[in-house]
Image (tube, rainbow, N blue to C red; front, side, top):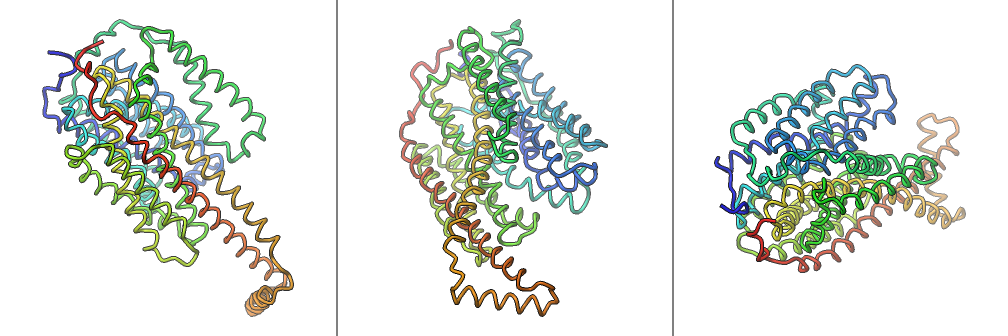
Length: 517
């Protein structure tokens, strides 16, 4: 039997459940601890700024392993490597919950990231191999339920658990899920025959070392850059230089290796090269707006962390609904059309969000988010199907590692760039508004008089000075609102410009897809 026609001996839906349990758990952990940082900092006698390493350490170690997941699965066997990853993730989750100091928690999170990094690409590869080509849309819809929905519900679930129990249960809940995942994988998961072709190979320590340093420093820069005003900090300049040098050496090293740890030659495939560019953009929009919208709701609308998380739930509901719909449509409709419609849908929702005001009702945010989440499904499922459509099945296990890495790196770039841009645009708008504030304006003097009278009635000592403070606060809020409008307006154009590029994908499989090489 040709390797390209290999299918698992067990029911493919049992295989799907066995790999998606652990994958959903891992993706959930990328965002579930975000809202609990103040609680973690207080409990472990650390500052909130120091506690952000709980997130950074996980993302760094996770990104490093994402690159090498395909190689490790061929080196040790996919079933064995996936079992090791789930076991390490589960054990380190228990260690996170038991941590008594911040360094202990950060160390446990590093182990957790090392264990969880391989789960996303391995699960994706397993599903793409388990389903026939014409049913891959259904497989990716099931996979998308985890990797798209989990980051959205993570903050909500994290806030609820932290408020009602303890932040430690954010990690303890992984233990039963991990144990069940291990049990099911032992029963239903198996290695495809072509992975045995590289048996006896050794670990590429040089390539792995350069990749780990380059990707790790890049992730730290993206995560911490805004805190230190980017390249104004000397260590950021050094980190950028070292990261760029290591990544360049890594690329050259991998291209000269006959059996590379990361098969960069796959980027010669047009569909795959386009796919990683698209998934990087999708990661930027998905993760960037997932962080940006709660900031808007908390800072400008006065929502609590929990309420802002709940306000994001319609996006998750829209994503779940679209996964069911798109999984069926991919069999009947050209995936390129679905992909274009998805990006146009994202552009439309960003246009709605760019017209928000400080007096909006919750429904003004909820309905655009439902459409936003629904459009995400129209992108993720056909995009993954098109990206892998012209690859040999024996190449998918390495392709999914690169694909997952670009989604995560894109997410980090999106978060860093959108937050940085929001703060800088707010400063620009504030300077403009203050410069055009006429001290002699009757409207301004009336507002100041009203504010001063209100403050005096509440017993404020220096009501005149405090009144100016209230007016300044109103100007700052208006400037912040305008900065959010700028960002969503920019995303409208980016998504709209990417939409027609969907037709650059090849529609079907390559003629040589049945060959093995």
